[in-house]
Amino acid sequence: LGEKEIDRIGLLHTLATLDEHPESVPINALVAIDGTPIKEDGMANEPDVWDMSRMIATARIVMPRTMVRLSAGRLAFSESEQALMFMAGANSIFNGDKLLTTPNPEMSEDA
Image (cartoon, rainbow, N blue to C red; front, top):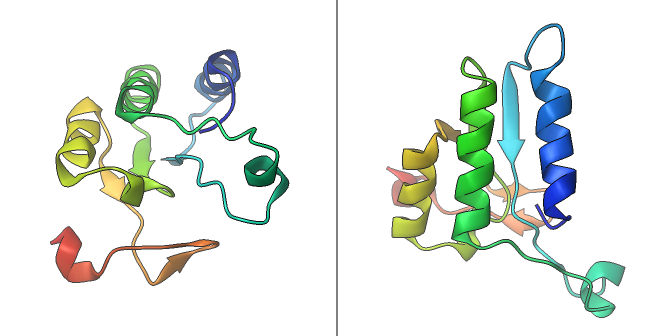
């Protein structure tokens, strides 16, 4: 996430109206990395916990059998905010050492 709300709605609409829903949909929070144009130009529109929770809940409603994955950027949120996202409908996370440009928490932190 980091785009406009109408873009998010459009993406969910596109996915929800496919002949078959995707098996998995990752929900990412924008992580503006130093040295990238979006960070340097001040264009970063980092979502808050409510933006993330609304996107997750909407994805869960319009694609009930799809795995909604809490993905990149989740370290920007507290444990209680991440818990809210799970209550909104996220049902998995990505783990491992690194997701492209950002670190992940240790496995023991997610246990």
